[in-house]
Length: 596
Image (tube, one colour):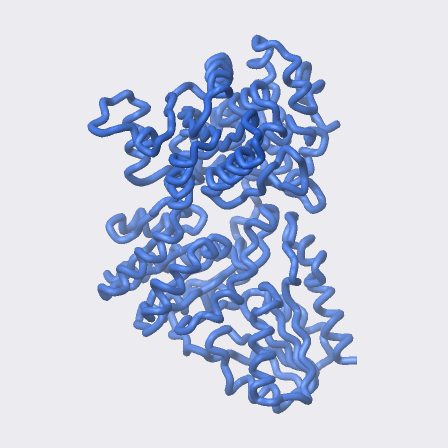
């Protein structure tokens, strides 16, 4: 059992909701404090998503106290707030392994527990999922089962959430949607719905019908989400209600840790911190290379100062993408549109039709949510939208829901789309500069999470020639073709290869491929290895194979290294690369074996 130095009296005897139900209502506030302390104690040393889970401690206890989970079905939207849920549903003793390789996942996961009835990680899926379950129960003739979705006020603003509400309102299904209203996603909420919910909480007289009642939900609230007696009484009442129900709950993100309440953005996932004072321990990397996201954000501001046609757009990730720099510098030309990737892409398309140069900054994994808009609204019309895909490749502890490994494959098949992956920060900076000079088609620029490799990246701008790769090192026997930042692994290994044997080409573009360079490679080498941090099925290596097949290069052996055809779990990036045979030493061994 992992309790560190937190003194326990109630929580130590609770492993499942059945144990929780043995407590009296008067004991629950003490349990809430213990659960909150337990989360703080472990996250302070093991890291993770802190503020969201602290904010729903009382709600989590009340839900498992009142409802009969897992028979009653409970879905948490996104899952950042589900740490308390995991601790109360059989995972307390292993919670210290949260988000670590081989440990429990940072988000609810159906493979992990029967209490995790739906896997999450991306926003706004809970209402549709719980509605499907509720409608299934109705078809089975089970009228006693309860179906609950907990969704935040940032997630509920997304289109998919409203699609679910729209359907649920006419379904007559028994479901309860709980709005966890804390005025925060990862960053502060934006938009008209935020203003509406603020008016509701203030008790202001509305000039129109309650929004959720208009969608045929029976609305109750707003109530204090940190008051256990009120929560339990209201949930017990709603437990017997039929049809679509909506409960509006007010919480504070970071509740119980003063510093987390005061700086809710920083303490969303603060890293390691002092559990008593809340002081975040600064990582000793101040003098190292910058993060790719900051190279993007600061360069965009630099360019926007001279080009008033540049527009910045991000869907709810101004801090994570570093679009915050442009939002602060040019608030009339940079926009956080909330959790609305589809809208962000088509908004950018609209700007492009009017001669502006929209930079749409989206995490690679979240770009998946706007795939139709990328094809239909941008590429089909050949609009020069600039997609800046952050968190490409393996991202680490957030796991399968957040790895950006599919982008090269799903983007390169789209007509008109240019796909570029910089080797380093200088390449990223130069491409950001090049595209604002004028392009005639959409482009995706994908770059990884975390720090780069260059100490001094603020060099004078140089235009990038579209569709052209580079020879990094010549060699006589084997050619290694890389795309993006994983090419730095080969640069690190240059001195460990036999002198003059291994050539290294940074291809830079997945689309268009540098066919002249590839003809040179295939005319020279009998062995070619491709290396990418994207999926091997349909990705960069597949594009090279297609080229070789099309041009009948049958005498060249081609080996593709990349992400295998499986979902990659969570853990430290180095551990994950090792688990899929892509560590530096494993790549070196493949190259040396091929040479021999």
